[in-house]
Image (cartoon, rainbow, N blue to C red; front, side):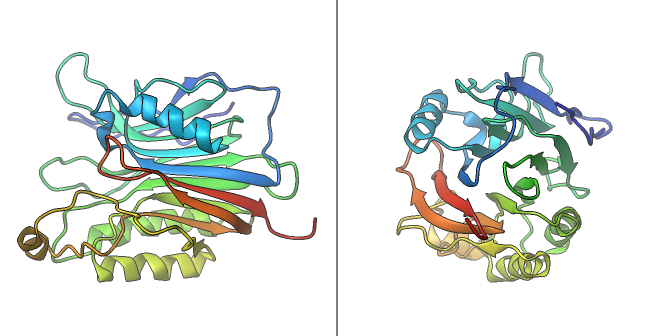
Length: 273
């Protein structure tokens, strides 16, 4: 596997390397026409049960791609899968595991690029990460999967949010084949959601809307605090956009140890059979 786009963040508690996690099955090097995807912010894997929950969901859904945000680099690997991990930060004490985004897949990516946001979040002074992976397909152009955790904690401006999405727009817009664009977009305001929707239209990806009721994502704060922070609790944070696919099924999995709920979709490459 070729790992490209290695990043160097500079000083502080940031970390700087795309990591390969687990062992890919090289005998099955491309994805089929039908692709199943799981997307989940697992909240820093802080609950010891999360690895078991991930294994249960993966067993039930049998995804080809699993896009995780707020994940620790040392999360238990899944049998039959490999993964690439893009770290954003770690605590400064010895033995601390890095946190970031991870894309798990049955087949190895043919290219990988990690993208740290150029802007930082207040207090943490750390970037948010995105991870672009390219997979060969049995039919047609390669599949581009973009796994993102968007910047948060800006009450009165969207400047940093726009900047991060602009970097992703350039990557997605340059790819002519099918796309899966998913993650935790932190779309807790109408303004943020509009920015994301307009960007999606420009690069030709469409959001999957057919999820069942109950797609709660993110912590549910008291109404007063939501109002103070400008958060619309009716808006979900985790979303999946696609290009070049027909949607066969969409599912939301039960609550677990994270304050987000896992989302699954089954896709079929569009076009003649």
